[in-house]
Image 1: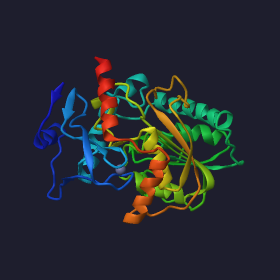
Image 2: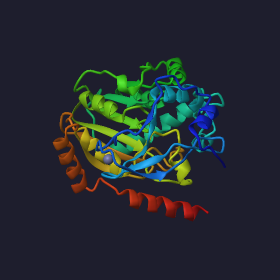
Image 3: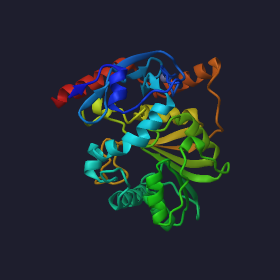
Image 4: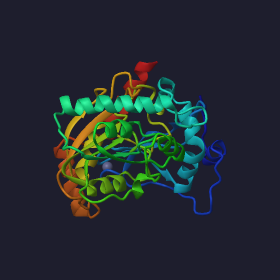
Length: 336
Ligand SMILES: [Zn+2]
């Protein structure tokens, strides 16, 4: 494994030229707005057997794992536009199910995989979660990719909407007669109190601002409606691969629940069972369902932050950096 140590080498590796507005700075914790962190890993896997000098930190107040410091938006725009598709094509997950071809274009295999996952998910919601939808319920797939979930749920009588910033995935879906908004989820705008079901499967790790995404989702959802988040909740491979450069943040079950509470949802069920099918190529993923209970609350002032932190501590949705580091060290040593 090659290890890159300087930012200059990193830019050269990624073919990126910083502009005069470039910055590389610590961000606040995206869960609790804290600004004190412990470095968990100093490097992340950037593909091509290369470790990149981008550290992953854990928030000292709630434990949330984030890539921190963060680069400028232009850096991530460049990465996702020019490099992510080919990185994704070479990923372990893509070896299990070829979601994209060598050039990063969506495939029929990926679409059918999504369709089958949607079938399993619908069965789980009905049979295990025992949640029922009204006839013609409105649903939204945030980061819907090539639209396999939308296709299944539309055939099952739902009124379906979806969005994704990936132009090639959206073009593929349009070829199947599925209309998708080609936008980043931070820009989504739907009628308020409209949706009965919103799901975000594996996308919240990639977006620029998960709070803006969840805020907009919450506004567009009816009281009592269902939300589902999917995150890579536990490591299968080495920690530098688990905490890889493709992801800006890493949602364990505790932190999916914590961010749902922040946006007015009540977490009702968390599971690491493969609810989208055991052969779906999603091993390592966990799921948290929530119901919309309250309107969005502002956590930016000190009093609101303190009360939110004590609430998620009481609920057991915080972790400590030391525990997470120990967990990852034990995990890595067991792999050798
Ligand atoms: Zn935090």
